[in-house]
Amino acid sequence: MIGVLGASSVVLREDERACDPAEFLVSRKSRKFMGLQDQLAVVAVGRALASAGLERAQGERTGLFAAVGYIPFERADIDPVLADSLTDGRFDVLRFGREGYTRAHPLLTFRCLPNMPAYHVSANFDVRGPCMVGYPGPGQTYLALDEARALLEEGAIDRAIVLGVAHQRNFLVEHHHERIGVGPERLRDAGACVLLARDGQGRARARLDSLRVDYTSFDPLAEIPTLREAPAAGAELGPASPLAAVAAWIDGGARGPLEHRVDARDGLSGRSRWVTS
Image (cartoon, rainbow, N blue to C red; front, side, top):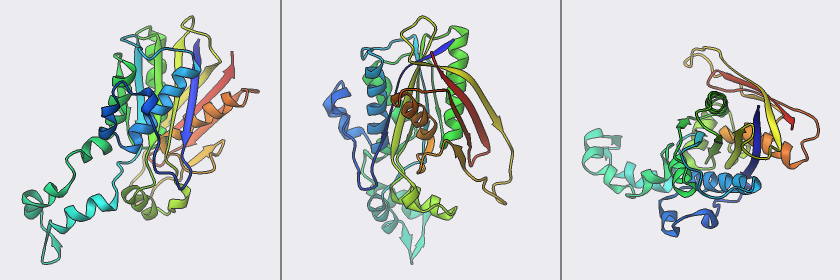
């Protein structure tokens, strides 16, 4: 049996642009290396561990399985790079290589790369077990859940931190979604975490009863599959969405089973059933 020891979600309001992870940081100086998705990841994991009554150090018997949203980038960071990469008004890759890329802040890549949330979680909570990072939608969260389940059932790990996080209210991610017909008002910055464990590894608040992941191939040049999710989140939370549903169910008292399903835009589909212990 795979139990749920703790869960949490952090969903920012439309006007919020920051999330304070200070209480969970081993070193406050690391804050300067963190983007919003890193902050959301650390806070979501920290609160999930706290809800399970667990200490910061997790060690080698805890794995980290994450899904991270589209790479975020603000227009104020892109514009100087573009301005010094143009020749006669057109993008010049040679000039970009000589001048344009130097206009980017040297810490910028630390704040937007998909693997950085996993780094900050592992560094601040001493997670030294197996790790995987998926990208960029809720279907990848189901792959993370499936990998965590497999290693827990094999006995390779005792606990699994499953994380979904997305920084979506920024120029680059909003631009992508507008191209596929999703307005920025639908997007939210969010992080969510579920802490899973093998039987006997802690007091379970619920358990994962069943899980299934499927893939349907498609031609990305001809169509983009429609995102469908139930229960509906009310806004698009990216890969945080499935775990946020579990956290909301547990916080609401876990009355009756939770049946969650999602059909993502990358062809992945996930189905899960969660029940009280």
